Image (cartoon, rainbow, N blue to C red):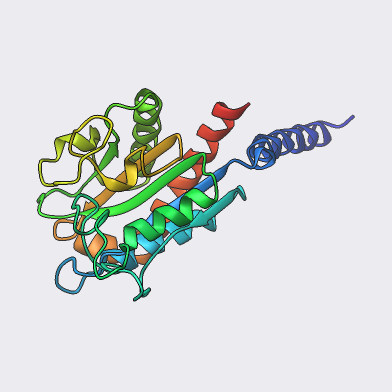
Amino acid sequence: MKKPTIIFLILISLFSQSCNHYNAVTKKKHTVIWQPSHQTDTGKDFSEAAVCNAIVEAAMGTNPELKEYKVWSLGKEQYHHADSGSNTKIQHTSAVIDGKISGYAYEMKQANKKHPFVFIAVHNNGGTRRHAIWGYIHYGDRFEPENRELAGRLVKAICSVTNLENRGVLLDSTTGRNDYRCRSTGKLSFYSLDENVNTAPYRVLLEIGDNAASHEFLLNPVNQKKIGEALKKELAIWLNEKTK
């Protein structure tokens, strides 16, 4: 057999192995939920909702194909704070106002109906003066170590394709800017990461960039796509390792 033919067969074999690697993830069919920020009140000439949705859409459009869904309340006027509010405030999350649940509560109800395995919330930070990325996980539940690993890997993957500074993984109980508390621990927490609200075992919230320090960077569609693709690829690798 001629050498070029041998090389060609080797390349075909490697390509096949790569496809099988991703197919292993696809066949598991564990549900992934994406929750882009629905906040539009996030600075001059900047919609966090639009930026985060673009990142999530890029992730969902990247191979491999997973059993994945987006939960988003933007524009749904039957819910209060459907396009604004904080994931850390009672009034914006768990409160019922004029008989209406919040946009966050709606999103969590939609997510839980899908019986998710992984939940990834995508946000942009503000007021940090840092062109950086932060990963957040929930304090105190039994999946905390695994969620720390997942968040760390997703943060690192995004940093590898951008110039964002890696600020590591933090607990949602450490922000000091919220009044929503987890029923189990009594600690301050993010509503979307609370295990009493979100049934997914693996739950991560990413704060990607700062709406001032990273303003132009985040508004660039090329960067949004790059971030989304990096997110999806690392998630697929993690899923394959986790479920094989």
